Length: 455
Image 1: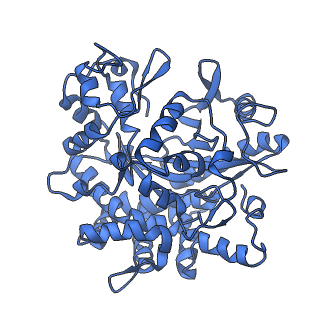
Image 2: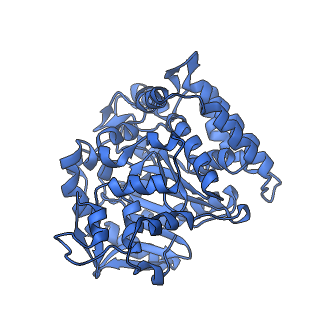
């Protein structure tokens, strides 16, 4: 969501403005939308290496080609193209050149899937002639961290220098992971709380269903979602399961207090990023930062700061589901279907909450910590995560059927759950399927993944 320019420059004088900003996201049910984002790894088809930013086969040339051919507006930092904008959608760059589509807010999953397919077609129409391909997985399967390029974006330079101070895997998160996420609306503070709690408790189930990152540097890494594992030692100040969400006092105000305790990364001033890594946003609000003496934080700074926390579910003026590995096009449609089915129908939301409401704090953390390695086969109570996944999928399917948003063939949105139903029926994650191929017909090489699983 873009912030009106009149609001961007408003100085912050107190916490209530920050609380009101979150509350301003409330929408009536008929205005609820679906925003889907996905990242993908670029590779050169001849040597499988990730493309650099510059050069005939670089990311800059790709962005400029997509903009010219498909009528996107180029967004620049200085003279450097760093993103594309068209209508309410964006194409942006992750730190190592992973290409991200941040889709427009849409009414149905049918529209979402058309948007994803159209985007992939547009990218392919330019990338093919450059000898570039794109792969959807949760973690870069072949290349070392030091073999990944860095994109020339100001905020990434700041994060790159700060990450090693607060965790061992932050640079891996930046350069070698890809995700798919969906952004969903809420109608009131109480609705936000219900959706936040339910989706946070269920996030490990999504991680298990979408687990697709079993390789590091060409070899099995012992995990099914290594991307999810990477987040466990990225930066404890801004990641995790947010236990306070399940406390009776949780609401906008409590989330604001959490964010005020998250150390800063930067402030964007006069077209450039000011390095404020590790600084206190409360001091910025008071105008007492040594780096910006007398400068008070604005609402634009607050909106930016909200993007610098990375919990499993994130609150801005909507809720972001952040637990899934990137994957092929049909799973890019399956993730929004899963969460819309669970959260946008009242009966489904109640059933989903009933499924998780008696999970203890220890159980929620055991799921979060165990799923990256074991996924669907992680033991839980008297069964496994597989049992939870099957039940969650059934709830989501009923929710989507009750929504009754039909395509031109008369099919409702539950058709987009099919890839997940196949995973549950086989009790085999995408990661386990790739490991089977690696130990079988791929003869111990990850290289075939770039051909067999490319978009």
